Length: 120
Image (cartoon, rainbow, N blue to C red; front, side, top):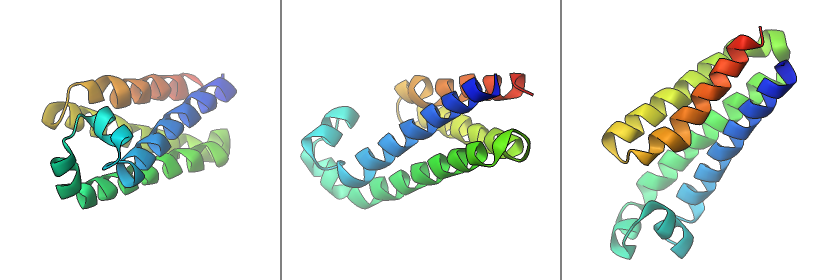
């Protein structure tokens, strides 16, 4: 069970690496504008804010990777902490930006958290 839950945690980490790439490098490009539904003007005006947001997503991915790398005993509280951060960020994003964030970020984080807790 621990191997499976760690795989799901790494999947959530991969999602956050994807968010990092979109927000830091593709925000003003056609792919980023299409994914986030942005006008070219808005994308350009908010580019630095998006890059900052992407960096935070990278920190979430790094923390989840650290939790998996640390192993089932030492990494357990690390995974719980960072998955909690992922869930809270997803809930906040859904409440303040777009409801889709709940399904794309918070729900996968909650599934992973449930699996991590069940693997103990």
